[in-house]
Length: 359
Image (cartoon, rainbow, N blue to C red; front, side, top):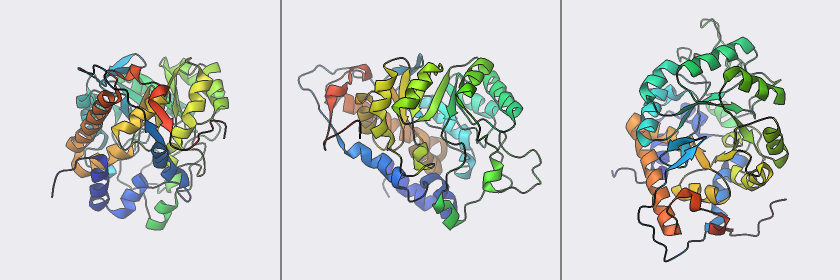
């Protein structure tokens, strides 16, 4: 059997390697999974417009996010409970992200503690994906621990006031093993059985005022993850967000919303350069990242591709996935006629079907 040559190969092997009632949590989406599929399909509705006779010697994918240098405009998106896929879990992902020279965004529902992740990732940049819990003091304690462990930014997830209905999980009987460590969300008494929803004590009452509260309490830049509209993008800028991640939670929350890539142009327009804009959802190729850049993103994030690498090969699998994607980005840059990511503009992309940004 040949080694994987692209992300699709890793997806196929991960589905075969992981027990279906576990893999469903990482692979599936909410409701009829319309938005989850749309995230991937959106990239197929745009085509690249390469320019010729450009000197592309030394083309590099290196860039910066929030001022931190990274090897490419692709970051590791947060995803929960990574020890369900590999015994090393987030520790393996942190090592791989550091070796690849990119940011790892760590989920609040991590199955490894921040000091373990920090030791594995060394000086590589790390962001904390944050859920605000009903117990606000636990949230503050969580922020303080992340700050002490060298995290440099907070990605406040704003699209989970309540958990979406993930029917694939229900059909296959996904459940959290009682011995899985979840240091920042699990009930304080591990002997008390809790349902999936009860494990995650997220507050349904988070508002724009909480963005300002978190920025004040943390002393770190705050990124809003889960913005899909121009109206919320404008409010994010008004309330001092340092960056935005255009995201529909991988199609795992409200089914039937826009694909992230389709929402990206209106968010970029509304922000007007006041903060950096990133996008996640549906990334399968380096050319997907280039399309996101052409539509105004500073960088993209991916979770499912990383999960597949982790499931198949642990740290080595994640590093291979990141290396593949970085190589595809750099190859695509050169063939597009660009030597850096900053040179990718709207002139390098066009819709394959008429595109109405207001529709």
